Length: 549
Ligand code: KIV
Ligand code: ZN
Image (cartoon, rainbow, N blue to C red; front, side, top):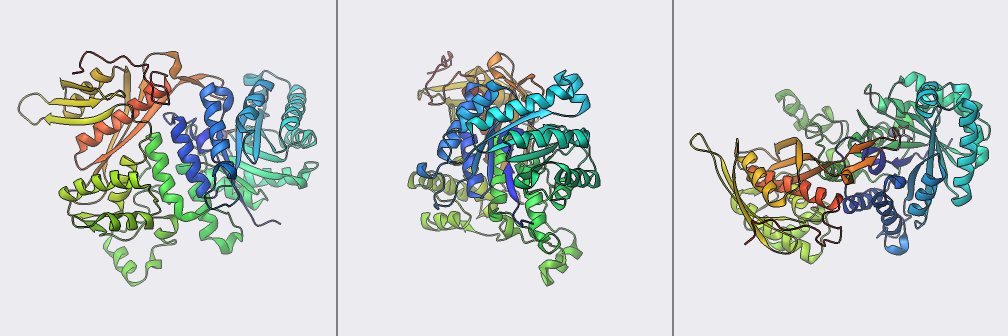
C-alpha cells in the first residue's frame, strides 16, 4: 500500500469556522503562502458561497498560491491543490468553481449529511433523496472540475451499509477523493478504524480513489482517530494548524505530522511536510486569529519543550533524548538563547532572521531594525523568541488602518487611571483623545474607541511574557465582536446559520499597555476592513471624528 499521506489543511475553512477566528483576505493569503511553503498537499481555502468576500479570498489564493506562473512557489516546486467547499447545491458548487478555477490544481469539495439524525432533522430528506442529490451534485461538480472530493457529513454516526451505497454512487458520479468526517467527534479510535476498514472493503470502485479522514476533537480523540483511520488505509488527513475549528476543534496538523515523523518505525509512512516551519505557522495562525495556543499544547505549546524540574534538567544535560522524544529544532523551535544585543548591527540582525527562516525585503528589514534598536535599548539581550515577537508585531500586521502614534498612561493607587492616545488615521491625520477607565488598559481602549468609533464588545484579552526576566517583552492577543451591522455576520456551511464574526488582534512590546493598545487596534482595523468601513485597498469610507487636529 502507498506510503505517502496527503496533508489537507483546512485552517482557512473549518479552522476559520471556529468562534472568533475571523481572518481578513490578506491574512488568509499570507497563511496560505506559509502553508504552501510548509508543503501541505491541499489547502482548503474557504467556503466561497458564504459571501463575495469569501469567494474573492479563495480566488486570490488560487491565483497567487496555487499557481506556479504567478510565483506561487518560489522554489519552483509543485504548488498545492486549492480546494473550495460547497454544500450539495448548484449555487455553492458554481461559487466554489468560480473561486478555485484559476489554480493550477483546483478541487471542489462537496458534502451532504448521511446520518439518520442529520437527514431527518437538518436536511429533512429521505435516504433515497440523499443518494439522488449526491449523484446529481457530484456529477455536476465533476462536469466542471477533474478533482472532486465528496464527504458524507456525520459519517461517524451514519449506518455503514448506507455509507457504502452513498460513497459508491459518489464514485460513479466522478468523486476522486472520499472524505470520511467524524463531524461531531463522537467515535472511538477502534470504531473509526473499523469504519474506515469497512468502507475500503465494501465500497464499489474505492480502490481508484483516495480515502481521507476528517476528525473533530469533542472527546479529545481527533488525533487518535485520524491515526486509526490511517492504520485502516486512509491516505489523506484533514487537519488544521493548532487544531482550531468548530467547537473543540479539528485534528491538529502538527500532532499528526509529528506522530508519523517521530514514530516512523511504527507506521512506516511519510508526509511531505517541512516540519521546521511548524512553530512559525502556529504562531502566525494564533496571532492572526487571536486564539492563543494553550501552554501545554502538544508540539507547539510554550511548554512543549520546556524542562523545569531539576531531575529532568539533569537528565537533559547528560543526554537530550532522556526526556525529549523529538528535537525542538525539528519543528522550528530554536534552542539558542542569547542572540543579539545593543551593539548588533543590521547585518547580524538580517543573518539571524534568515537563520530563523525570515527573508525580508530591504524596507521591511529597515523597519524591523528600527524596532530592534528600540528594544535593545530597553532589554539587554534579545533572544530568538523576542525576534519572533518583533517580526509578528512589525512585519505581519497586515492592513494597518489606524496606527498607534503615541500613548501615555497615568495609573496606580492614587487618582484615576488615565490614558492619552494619539492615532493616525488612514489619511495621515492625527487624533488625540484622553479617557479615564477602571485601569490603564480600560482607559486606553476607551480612548481608542472614541477615536475609531467602531462599536464592539471585547470578548477576550490575554497577556503573556515572551521570555523570562523582568525586562521581557509582553505579547497581547484580543478578540472582539462588532455590535452593530449585518455586514459582520457570516453563514456557516454546516448549520446554515448566520453567526456574528469576531476579530482577533496581536501586539508585542516591552510595555504591556502599548502591546495591549496595538493588539486592540489590530483587531479594530480588521473589523473596519471586514465590515466595509475601510475597503481592502485602504480607501476610506470612514468619517473622521471631531478629535482630529
Ligand atoms: O466536519 C465536517 O463534517 C466537515 C465537512 C464539511 C467535511 O467539516
Ligand atoms: Zn469539520
